[in-house]
Length: 191
Image (tube, rainbow, N blue to C red):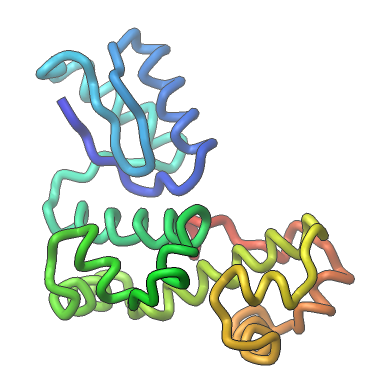
């Protein structure tokens, strides 16, 4: 039985959901961003209710609606792209719209309208916000120069990255780097 879970955006989220399933002794085949695959074909209503209640306390919830699942999958694809697979776009010169359509098996126009109507931001705005959060993360790690970060995230120049960074965060990358204040970062599920 596969359940789709809202707000799972990082490895810690998958671990938290896995721990809740373990506490309830629910046999889990796998847990990944946005989904849990249980070994049994069905869960009892009591098990499902307890699991739902426990993960809700952690800020997650089970998604039953197909459109909500599609939006969560869109977010998951964008997060995976930014944090793991960004070179796929760069190396293969693929557009974000083509990438999402291919991975979600839906027309991009449909995805875009659905995403905007439910989330209140466009897919492109969400994508940019995720790239800025990744930039913040990389700045805090202090392992890459701004030029390397711009290249890694597919910006045409440092100036373009800096402009978007300031527009989103209100700070230049240099100002942010000098602050190194964890309160300046936004949790991925809050973007």
